[in-house]
Amino acid sequence: MSEFYTYLQLGLQHIADLNAYDHILFIVALCAVYQIREWKNILVLVTAFTIGHSLTLALSAFNIVLIPAPIIEFLIPVTIFLTALYNVSLHQQLADNQGAMRWNYALALGFGFIHGMGFSNYFKMLLGQEASIIQPLLAFNIGIEIGQLLIVAVILLASVVALRLLKIQARDWIVFLSGAAAGISLVLMMETKFW
Image (tube, rainbow, N blue to C red; front, side, top):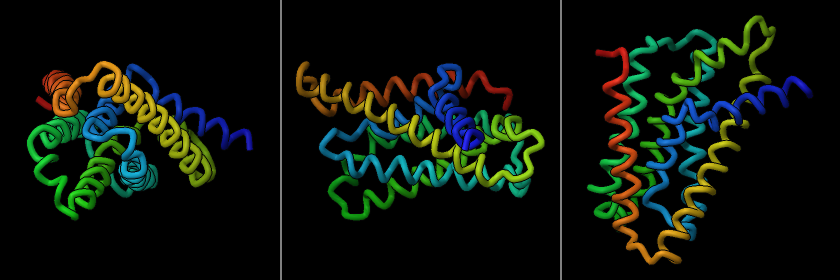
């Protein structure tokens, strides 16, 4: 059980590591358009993202899918930028459409695949010579999910403060969060070794 707890803790620490803030930034962009009353949708959305990166993490750990690190380092900020762009340009138009949440879940799942590749090198390094990777993989992913849910809670709390206490308009809040995420993601794209 201690090995399970160790990997759970490592997953939690990895998502909360401020040096790996690109994953935090993606969660911010992903949740920017939601308010606390939509917590069930957010929970499913973040879980779709977790499923995506869990599958890729497993495929990478088994050496089934291997993508060069510079490509992944570039694609992660691209996912942040595209999510932020979606927030300010398409989300409101699609919000009235019944299929909009399915589209959001599909995007979160797909972008989760890319982010899973970002976790994979770190996870492989942690594994070392482990005989079985199933338990460490499960524990690591649970740790990441817990960390993501804590980040979501902070974002929703900030949203409550901004929208209810400070009386900021919802559209302005979405543009602020999404604009910040898009700007930082552009800097991250330029800093990658992809070029």
